[in-house]
Length: 163
Ligand code: 4NP
Image (tube, rainbow, N blue to C red):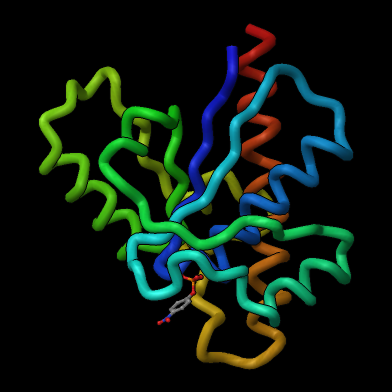
């Protein structure tokens, strides 16, 4: 069965498109089972239609990771379209949970909403820090954290497909 994953941050130009790109890269470069639909979105609308931040694109490109998506804002329909919504920080998590509460959707048909850091194994961070207003190293730190989390997520989903 297709696993449908939506990565969510604030602007959808730094962290969540990076998570999307890393996950797709892992799918191409590692052994795994099953089909995946992978997208990203932001809780905010400021950057809708934009490419990912050029600093994030170049940091990702150094690792061979391509970030082709355009920014979009999460909608209530995403709660039904995806199986899992992976949020980057507490604010994104709270916003998506609020949207879920406000919708009248049946709980059972809605996506699971999870902090992506719950899939980390190397790092013990509880959020992916927003790199937008910081220096270059912030983008590398985000990619390190997201590579760890996405590997853990893919391993978890692959195990589930086996059982
Ligand atoms: P993101 O980073 O949530 O990882 O995409 C941000 C991008 C833009 C803004 C904030 C965070 N902004 O305020 O425009």
